[in-house]
Image 1 (cartoon, rainbow over the protein chains, first blue to last red):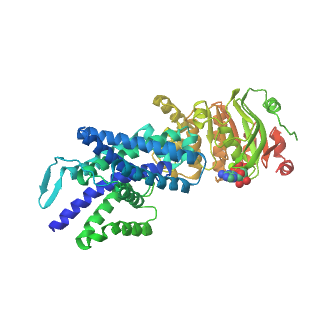
Image 2: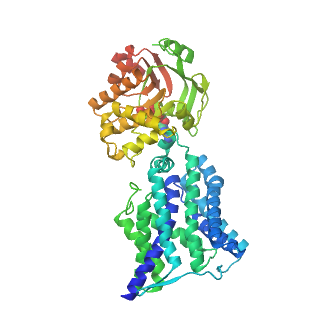
Image 3: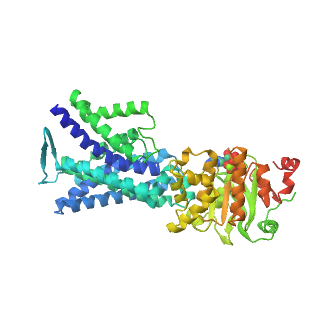
Length: 288
Length: 251
Ligand SMILES: Nc1ncnc2c1ncn2[C@@H]1O[C@H](COP(=O)(O)OP(=O)(O)OP(=O)(O)O)[C@@H](O)[C@H]1O
Ligand SMILES: [Mg+2]
């Protein structure tokens, strides 16, 4: 039972992590219809940016802000430099997908060239350790949950209640109609790339603090974001949150009965089963 | 039957009113395929200009090109005498030119109220928007009743009313209206045509309307235009087109 509780808690924290990644990735996809695989290495760049700043003696919160800025700039740049010229030429979606994979490889290799291989960790991070009955956790775990609640909640309110946010939702619903009523869809896409990428920087910094950064950490991040979004339903924040938790819990609780080496395959199995049962995802796109 | 090519000649037929929207020699299409050839037309102030034509004649393509969606292939569009060829939709909307696309141009996942609010997206002053929304509700009371309903769950007729309502939220001077009667039951078509009349007569909006329902749309038009395989084959008073035989010749 104690093990179950611990695994359940781990599932919740991992689920929050996946959910936040999914929210950012899903926002970009739903609005621009771009499968932005380079989301992964940009997430990694954010972690490296925070590590680099911290290694220069920048206080941790400021290093985090720097990471957010780096991710936002890289996200916007990838849209303006790579995706937008492709979209303007009216190329099929597959072209943007391939470009995104190319960008993925490019950024990951660049990270390796600039920072070298090996795990980057921030030395002497002090975090609190808690015991709640049999469950062990640290303040970083709490931050993972809190960051989802705060940022996911803020994004939800922004999209639901502000003029600008509603325009983004409108574009998700019907891009051409959005243009017809005078929404500048290019400006919205830039905003969405900035917001989505900035969101990914937060879990990136938390993972840096928890496990350190490696050049290939982006793959797992974008893969989990992708599965989360497909499971939850594209274009739905609630969907991404439920999808993230579902994935985190199934993966973690799976360890209770299934050997560890199967852990990453569990995500595939969940994805497959849900897509067979509900091809539109748990929520579908009809609800924010 | 008069074949009119120049906008100037068309302007004369516009019952002497000033031309608000003039199209000269406009071409449009998709990729390399040209669908609309050398079309000229003029829309007079406070006029309802009806555009008829067979399926695939290029009516939608023409309206889109006028509104700046898709690159025009030659020719020009001017609005109040200023060249607006290929201008961004956002600028058109700010400038009083609205487009209601074919087939219920609404945001299906959003509420009626949100759709209307978005219709006024280019106008940041919310007090103005509230006024305009009240006018839309007066014109289409059903939308007021259904304001919190998701647009995708409205009936076809209600969606068409909402689409027109969204255009009215820009407070346009000109509306390009693409087949508002498509897929509607006859009594609803009448209801929509009445609304078009109100928008034209009481709000003074000039309307370029594409229609297939000749019977119900001809009586409200001051002038009619027939498009055949991308070219104008008739531009003149609507009355001669009431004659079935005359129409058959044109299609
Ligand atoms: N997106 C597109 N890509 C390529 N060809 C198109 C596209 N849209 C329309 N066409 C073609 O252009 C021609 C004109 O189409 P358009 O939609 O303008 O006709 P329409 O007069 O509006 O017809 P309808 O009365 O059926 O709405 C048709 O032959 C159509 O097949
Ligand atoms: Mg059409």
